[in-house]
Image (cartoon, rainbow, N blue to C red; front, top):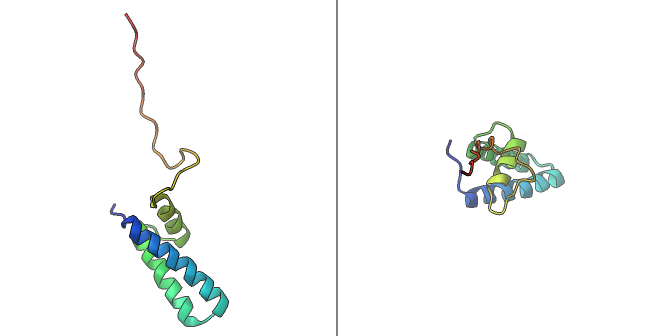
Length: 85
């Protein structure tokens, strides 16, 4: 799956949060419509269908993102134990 460049994701996330504040404060249909547009763009850019999943995916894609556990990583590769002769 293609993923948007981190700089694009960063801009979309910042725009989403700014518009969510603006939409909450003003309640205008224009602000709400712009928020929905950015949310849809985030979903497309991250390959998700829900804005909360898109924000999570973007967060893990941005530089400096770290997981606190290995839940998003695949299974660990099997290790071979060497026997010393």
